[in-house]
Image (cartoon, rainbow, N blue to C red):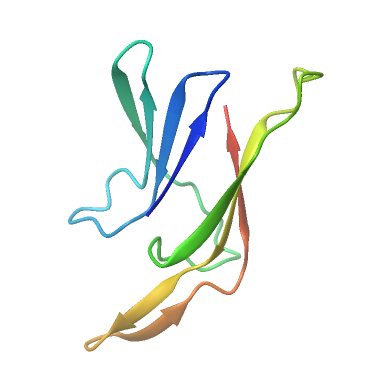
Amino acid sequence: MTCHYKEHDDVIIIFGGVQLDNQYPIILANLKERTWNGMQLNCSLEIPIPLLHGHSSHLIMKENGLKEHEKDELLIIGGGGNCFSFGTHFNINPMFITCN
């Protein structure tokens, strides 16, 4: 699991970790409003579904000249794991997640 703080929005992004139901792999906690929203991860069929633990992430912040079409992004690198029943899986592709 990794966490990032977006100061200009006063939001904490919590990404990944081991979950029982994997319902919300991304959580946005708004500190100003004291609310949180769980979000699903939409993956295409072209890449395997990632395992969201054991990864590293970096929040790429767009600077003050933020245009409407430019959004902050979260870069996810690595991750994966080993299961005695199902074998080993490692995420081979980095992922970019757009933060709206």
